[in-house]
Length: 279
Image (cartoon, rainbow, N blue to C red; front, side, top):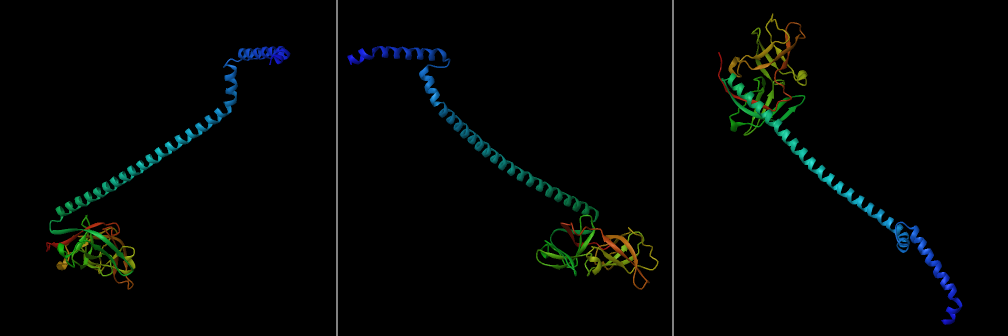
C-alpha cells in the first residue's frame, strides 16, 4: 500500500483535485439543487412524468365515470318526473272531461225535466256493412229496457236500445239500417220518417222520407223526434238537412240528414228510462 501511495500519490491528489473542482463547478452552475440530487432527479424524471401521466389519465377516467353516473341518475330522475307530470296531465284531462260531462248532464236534466236519465259509458263500438251499434255499461239492474232512447249530453238522439243484459246493453245508432223514427221538421212542422240506409251508414248519414207534397224543406233545417205514438220523447234533435233529393220515380222528395250527435267521438251517453208524453 505504501509503495502504491508512493508511486501514485501524485496522481491520486490530482484526481481528487479535479473531482473537487468539477463538483464545485457543478454546484456553482446548478441553480436548482445539489449535484447529487440533480443527478438523481435527472434519472427519475422520465418515471415521474410517466407516473404523472398515468395519474392524470386515471383521474380523468374517475371524473368521467362520476359525471356519467351523475348524468344517468339525473336522467332517470327526470324521466320519472316527466312520467309523473304526464300522469298528472292525463288525470287533469280526465277530470276536465268528467266535469264537462257532469255539467252537461246537470244542464240537460234542468232543460228536460220530463226525462228520467241514466248515464252510461260506451264500452264498445261496432260499425259493419250491416249495422252501427254501441255497447253501454248499464243494463236491467239500472232500469234500462229495450226500446229506450239514448241521447248525448246536448240532448241529441244517439240511438235506441236493442238488447239488454244485467249490466250492459246494445244500442243501435240512428244511422243503423234498422232505425225508423217519427220525425218533424222544426221550422215547418212537417212530419216525416227518419230511417237508416245501407249506402249512407258508412258516411254516418240517414234519410228523411215520406215528406208531404209541397214541403218547403231547406238545407240546414233542424229535424227532431215527433213523439207521435209515444215510443220516444218529442223534441230530441235527430240532425240537420244536408241535401234535398228526388227519388227514382221523380214523384217524391227525400232529404239526407247529418246526425247532431257525433257518433264517432262519444264516450258517455244518457239512457232515457222514462218520459212524460206531451200531447
